[in-house]
Amino acid sequence: MKNLFNAVLRLIVKVALHVYFSKITVHGKENIPKGKAVLIVSNHQNALIDPILIATHTNLKPHFLTRASVFKKSIVAKLLDFIRMIPIYRVRDGINNMEKNNETFDKSVNILLEKGSIVIFAEGNHSNQRNLRPLKKGFARIAYQTLEKEPELDLVILPVGINYSNHRYSGSKVSLVFGKTIQPKDYFPLFEPLMTSAFRALEPLVSSIPEENYEKDLEAIIQNRIDLTKPDQVREFLSTKNHKNPDKTYSKPYFSNKVMKVLHFPVYWIWLWIQPKIKDLVFYATFKFVIGLVMIPLWYGFLIFGLPKLGLTQWSLSWIFLGIIYLLANSNGQE
Image 1 (cartoon, rainbow, N blue to C red):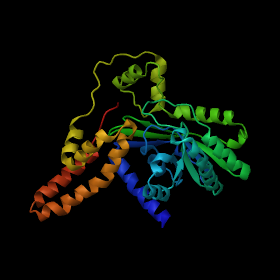
Image 2: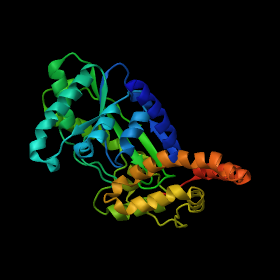
Image 3: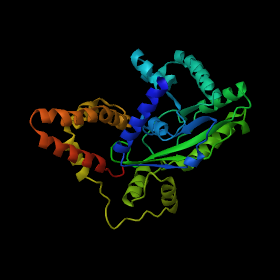
Image 4: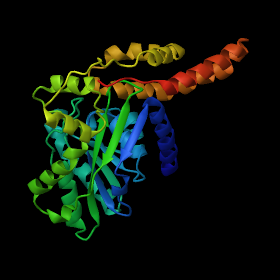
């Protein structure tokens, strides 16, 4: 039952993601292993959107290490456990809670011993800034604890880079770049060499803009129409150190996005009500996606069944047609 629920949910969420984003591109699919224990190590820029992108664009059916603070309510905790999320505790969650990570690591090890897969965002936090932060050793600890129990296990680390053209808005683009796998056996039992190797494998998969002159470089990339979802283009542009002023100033798409909001105004109003309550901008896309996932089907249900009952059948058909057209045509520029 649990597997069936997750399979159906995965399909629904994947379709919804392809509506939310104007384009999702996957590179390096040939690097995704089969029949192995897989520890997926990724950068983290977009809260819940990052793990569901990985889950829906691989066949690995991964579990996720998720910050423990979202498990506080028992009902939420049961739901998150049902969809394969495992709590990971940080210092900010209280020193006394850090011991609970032993249970988390044990559960993760058992999943890998059964040739399952786990996603861990090894930077240990999230940020909208486009650069790769130093990796924490949690992923290496899980890998080595697994190998201690089963030295001959075919365990690999799969690096994944996630890159967004615009973190906060729908109608933007995203790319997933799967790198070549790393064999943790080659570094066992040393932590630093494995962490260094993972960082070096992950770095070229991420569109990284150095913190020094970050805003200036980002603006130059956008104005010169360099695709932020393509790490190689970003890297090549920054390496030239020759940021020319383009002949025509870049301007973000406007019309289709505004019409889409008008045609889905109840959904947009809910977002406007919730938006001021969100303290961390990294969660903007997460809330927008969840609101759309729940409310857009309800809105179209009203258009299909509610308006005809009010004698507005022609309005219903026209609204549905235009709504779908502009929902699929929705686009937002880079930011």
